[in-house]
Image (cartoon, rainbow, N blue to C red):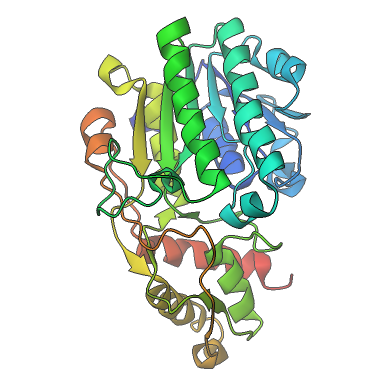
Length: 334
């Protein structure tokens, strides 16, 4: 992705936590292409070394295997950094329902460690991954940043607590922060394996094997699926903005388009059947709705457009056209 138009100073040094994960590794790549010094921290619990293997010999890239639950590690990695892109977290609503303690340790205690280290090491700006799960049981659509409901899962609680802590660290200590509420991000390097795999790579993997994808519920639940390059754009805009009004805010990161799960499977089958015509005939199965799932998710992106100049270029159809080429090339033989 070309960042030259986003005016990020190539001289700034940036720590990316969770940098071996799906979003983090894509951010590391983009920052290196911009000429930045990139420090990557990951404990490889959900990230993968293969996501950053090609970056390990880069003169501007340093990888440290470490855990944000260790304050000393956070202090060491924040030393000398201008900005922090905090992507490290334990995602997944079902994971948090199965193991709320570990989700809280990573997403709340680890987050607080990173804030403390950023404050102590005089980091100029702390940009962090928030979540659309914060909207909880809020019924209104589209989702607007200042109107949220009650969280529906331990994961959602942890991500809301992140926003509260970030706000306090600005008010109490002067640390500039920006929170990015991601809406169902998909794209290259997203892991299709494991119990908590995201729906798009999981369905792609199943369809490529001629296995029936299982939709939780009747397929009417909808999401604002967001291609990875839109997310990279927002992170870079949050880092590079010189608009003081844009700082210490929380933003939706999405395309602003609603797609239900039945539509999603149709789009996937259509795209994948251009590689393998048999995929068009694969049937869909339906299972019970998942606990803690928000029925519908659609973002307003007006605040991001107004304050950060956000201009997402990839709708779900355009994103899938890009992503499925990568999935086919890289996942077909898994």
